Image (cartoon, rainbow, N blue to C red; front, side, top):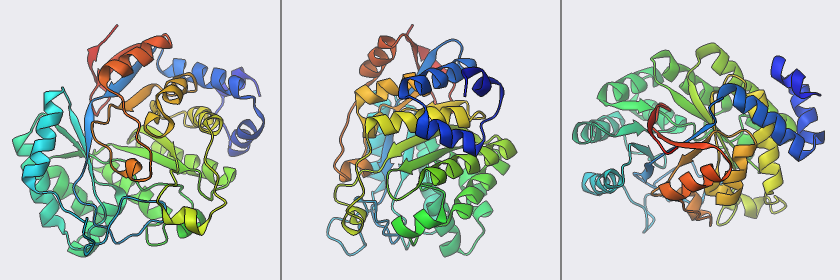
Length: 356
């Protein structure tokens, strides 16, 4: 398959599989870079200054790949107070942050009133902060426990100040995989429906993928196809973010011990084909948090146009034994080092400050 074919024709599943399995890595990088430059001809690579706030670690879903969650009776379970959340936001504002990615475990006792009050409190006290918060499984459970529809949850939280929702919980959009790694979690169709409904009320979202558990290459590509179809339908996804399973301290690695760590080669190969396949996604993030800063930088040569967040705080991946850190200056230098133009953005991918 030539670069010209990829430029002018939408990839089929079969073509994506062929690229993934047989194309040399460096050629994939060249193809992904060419596609990226079509979308971003000024060679601007963006990042956002934000903070993850995990408002609770209490969760009943018991995902086998997660080392972060606790049950309500555990000694180290928590629900953050408003004062604790406010302090975290104030610390973020002090370094020029603009967004909080607020997610928790799926707490069995928190209903819509709690979330409305929380969002309203933050939005009222910190109107300059964008709330990019609550994953699809949280939204679905809020609706269930509150006995209202998913759409009503989204509308009510939007009216209180929720701007957008992250793509967390997608993992692999294959029910075969989901039944193994997170049997209590929502199925693929429900994840897609939450995002479809959010898009229907003008709420943008992101799409994610966690690879490296029990999925096949065909299931990876099916995942891409499902989100590409939804993007064709709604145009509501702002970005795609992909990362590898981090196994330390998880039940999944105990139950399926032959799961192998994912190589940097595998990450970059998947990223490049994702860039080629997801032709209707403007932005693809590098996952330096799981891959480290060097491979995070290399990702910019394999289709990524965004370094994601400076990640002032990260607890979920850290619980699985991975703690990579990067500040704004380091991000700027990494971007410049590969000949691209660094810029700070907001949640909507609008440029706030240029460093070139």
